[in-house]
Image 1 (cartoon, rainbow, N blue to C red):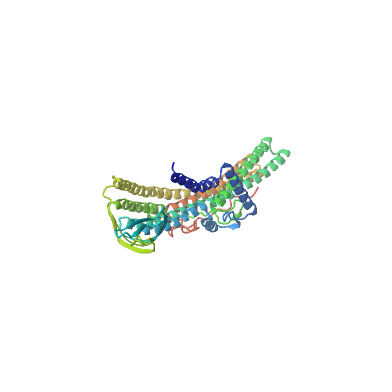
Image 2 (image 1 turned 90 degrees about the horizontal axis):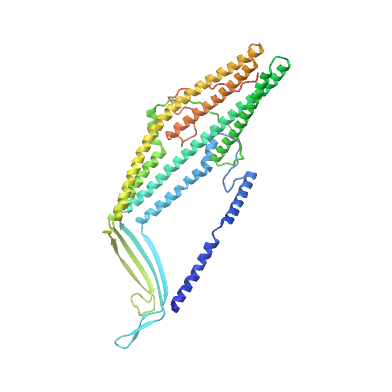
Amino acid sequence: MNTHSSAFWRLAALLALPLLLVACFSTPDADEMRELRHDAAQARLAALDARTPYEGRGIFLSGPLSLADALEKALAFNLSLQQEVLGRETAAAQIQSAYQNVLPSLVASGGYTRLDDDLAATDENGVSRRGRYVDQSSAAVTVSQPLFSGRIGAAIRAAHLTREWTEAKIRSAEEQVRYDLQAAYFNAILSQHLLEVKTISLQTAERQLSEANLRRRQGMASNYDVLRATVEVSNFKAEALQARNNLDKAFTALFRLIGASPDSEVTLVTPLPLVREAIDFDTALAIALSSRADLATAEYAVRLQREALANARATYYPTVSAFFTETYASPDPHDASSDDWGDEWRAGLTASWTLFDGLATRGATRKAAAELAQLELALQDAEESVVSEVRQRVLALKTAEEFADSQSQNLETAREALRLVEVGLREGQNTQVEVLDARNALTTASANYYQSIFDHVLTRLALRKTMGCLADAPLPDQPLFPSAAPDAPAPSDPSTPSP
């Protein structure tokens, strides 16, 4: 290996050493990663204990919390939605990048080269003239302006379509957050009601057990009555524990959607609304087909692919640009024998036209056209799915309304049955077992009533989401359409007083 080659490799190794050191010392190994995650865990636990936001998120909530307040906070702090919102910045950056196809570019360049020796030549008169100097320096500025290209219009249109596509995606994500948040909010209210029902039933069962023991001592009840009352107490304890666990899970899910601390302590103040909607299939479908964010997203995807097809075909057309370059250099560009700085300029047009590229353009065009056909079919399929979904939601809402009405009537019947059997027990016409059975029936009817109201709310919420009407406000306590029937009066509290 010669001296110049050895010097080159030594220089290359010296330059590469810092890069190797950076690569080695900037990558955490498994132990370091566990330590990093441990520190993050400690910081998060400290934030939870102090009930303070963690890295700008995880707000602590306390006091009354309405559905509107919960939605407002979820739209501000939900991490999934924040990820979609950041897409606006990406779309804006893509629009800026697209204008490179129409705006001029300005490039500054410079260089310095050290040569091994001067070169000189003697002319016909015996005068020695230098033809090369050991120091070669230059600085240049080049302005280029695209004049024609098949990609100019397609790139700009695609960038603006991407922005609109991003906005449609954000609206779709916002509707999903609104749906999930409202479903979680009303599920927490349902869990509260079910816990109340189970708690009151447990208290009543414990009281009836005490009365059964007293009646047995008086010779008015059998051992079976006491055993049956004991089993009822045990059953209701298990159901109350399960209801409390369901309530904890419901609030945890609600706080997760809001982006709040799981230790938040709130009181939900928006009740379960039973609102009757009178909406026909044609009206709901017309609104859905014109308002659904996912359909808008699919429509924008088709239009974006059309621009991608136009961009693929752009290779078939020539590209023309104008340029101007101003260069300052030493030696003088006009006189190589002068070691002084001099300048020169160049201007002109450049044109290129790919005549054959090995069928690459043809293949790219066919691929883009096939993907366009797929997206057009996907849009049609999405529209057909909306038709089916709207029909199901409209029918499901009517069914949920009828079920809520039947459970309301069933609740009143169960309350009356319990009242009659309690009177019969005092008059000696009914037994303690019959009272327990009536109490169980009322507990079941109460739970079914609240469940039916929740199912109706959820079905109504799903219909609004299917129609693309969730991005404006929370689920209203009034009908969505003025033609809806008036609200039915809500039955009284299903929790009955103890006998």
